[in-house]
Picture 1: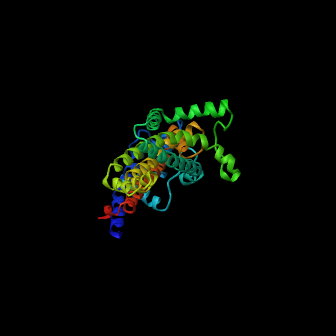
Picture 2: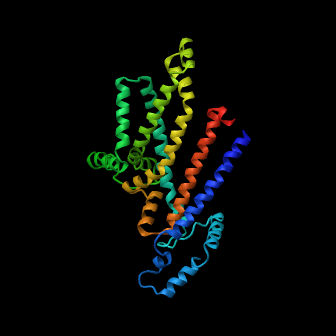
Picture 3: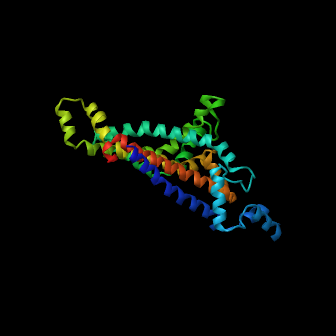
Length: 313
């Protein structure tokens, strides 16, 4: 087991190195001069050269990379070209709403998708199964922003049950906090509920054809016990895989959802930085999202050893 863990951990290092190189190269290869953006339209060449020197852009690429990596090791993600604030402080100010939205979406998705998938597998070919699968097709087909606007139209503008947009921290009230997360969570989780429910259904159906399932039924076990203890347990690896992939995919969904519901999180920060061509912020966010993605995949790989010990060997 320790050898397997070390092997997985060391396999992440080359990925992180490649990610760092790509992120570093983006600022240098993207059209446009960051120094000219900071200086403004009326700046002279001398002023632009001075800003470029202060940013270290006059040095060689290897020197710039070594300096950048050294700053990363110290937690320095650079300074925003627009607000002149440290990027790390911008991320710290915006990360709370994104974490709240992501966690609520993950919890809601798992609590809804897994039971739906199990029921669909249990009633394979029946009306309930067809209804769940039809709903999953709709969940796949409709973009998140359209679902978000429909939810706002119905539950906010017509019924008046929830605020239209915005975010309020939990410190200002639990209900006010939850009230502003319900619609974004429903909108963002739709596609992931559809995806995970289909995978759970197909995985459970496949396991239900195995000999040990017939043996369990022959022993007189209840169908609920067969489904939950035997079928679901042995179908855990593909289910955990798709849950992990869905969590990683949340990165893109959060950007769209936060924009639709005007949530001041990391997604909005990315959109604002792209529109303003704030390269240090874009660079830091891509690096952060990449690290999260790699970390999630590492956790998924390690979870396999718990669900199926044969994978260790």
